[in-house]
Image (cartoon, rainbow, N blue to C red; front, side, top):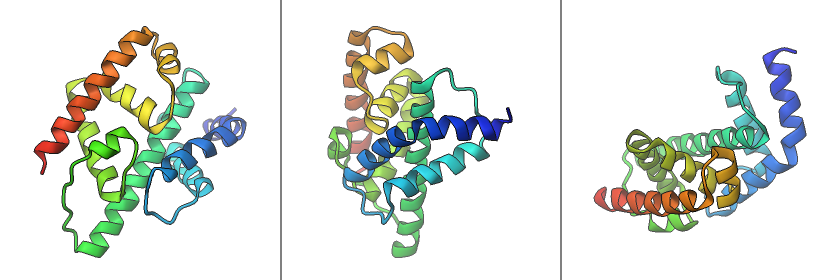
Length: 171
């Protein structure tokens, strides 16, 4: 089976779940005119164009799709803000985004801060991706990452604090 066929098969199997993840991301306050179906399709295109197709299991694949969806949303926000503001974007605090609500600018700032966190602590960044963007529970993350649930909870709290501090510094 070709890489594209394998990706299509996996996406067909997980389509409803991916639409739920996309709907959750869009329901958090994004001002973009994009449907959950459209977001899933754009994420699929990104994954199809990438070199990565080595997902360990279903949850790992859903996580990769959620990350691709985040990148799709951030890219759309960047294009929208560049057009509206002539490329000038303001940084805003993201306490709300870390706790569950974001607008376009906040999503972009959160994504930038998450990339910075990835350089400092990749495990915490992965937990944020899985929890915030993919909507996984602490237990699901623990199983996926093969660490204890309490470790996930501690790392999640530390990551949220780091992100809030990082985003407050950008003001």
